Image (cartoon, rainbow, N blue to C red; front, side, top):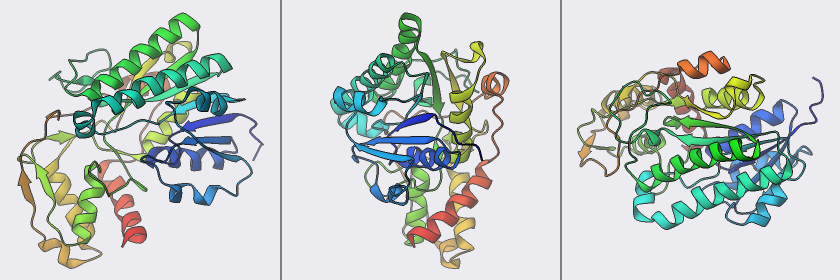
Length: 326
C-alpha cells in the first residue's frame, strides 16, 4: 500500500463515530490526530491505537481555542465529530450544549481556517429538520428546531456556510440520521436507543419505548457513515463542496419493528430473551415523530452507496455487543 502523507484530525476521536473513523483512516495509511476531552468518549475505544506511530492523541477541549490550534497543526483534513449529543441532555442543560456545539464548533472552524486546512467535514444532524413534516427529508427543506440541540446543529450549518463564503474554507456538513454500531455506548442517561435496548435485553430487563412505538427512524449503520465521511473528505467536484448531505440508509423503521428485530437477533444467543416483555412510556419532549432521509443528493454528487441496511447493520452490532459486553 502506498504511504499516505496526509494528516487527518478527528475531533471526538475517542467517541463512538470518531473512534471508528480513527481506525478506518489509519488502516488507509493516513496520519491521524485525535482530539478528545473524554466527556463522552472512552479511552478503551482508542487504547489499541496508542502504540501506532501514525496516531496522535491530544487530550483537550474544543471549547479551548489553544487546544484547537494545537490539534490542527499540519492537518490537511478535519473530521469534526466532537459534540454533546442528545435532545434530552440539551433540554436539561442548554448552556453546556451551546458551549460545546456552537462555541466549540466556531473555535474549530476558526483554527482550521487559520491553519489553512484543506477541508472541514462536520457532523450535522437530522434534528435540523425540526417540525417539518415532509417525508422523505430533503436537504433544502427544513422546519423550526424542536430542541436546544437542534438549534446548535443548525447554527453549525450557518457558521460553516458563512465561513466558506467569507474565508474560502471548504466545508461539508453530514446530517447524521440515528447512527448505530460497534462501540456505541449503552450506558448513561443519554444512551442511544439501540445499544440501550440491547443491553436491557441481555440483562433480561424490559426495554421502555417512548410512546406507542410507532415513531419511525432512518437507522444508519456506522460503516455507511464512514463511507460518507471519506467521500466528503476527498471529493474533487466543486459543486459537491460547501453544502450539507443527509447521511442515512434511506429507509425508515418504527421502534416497535426495531424492538422485534433486536429480540429475534438476541434470542439466537440467549433463547430467554424471546420472553422479555416491552414497556411503553410517555413520548419524549423534543422528539421528531418520523424521520426518513432522501439520499439522492449524496448519491448524485458524492457517489454515496450505503452497503448496510438496518437488518444487516443490526446483525453486526448485536454480535459486537454480545462479544464485548456480555
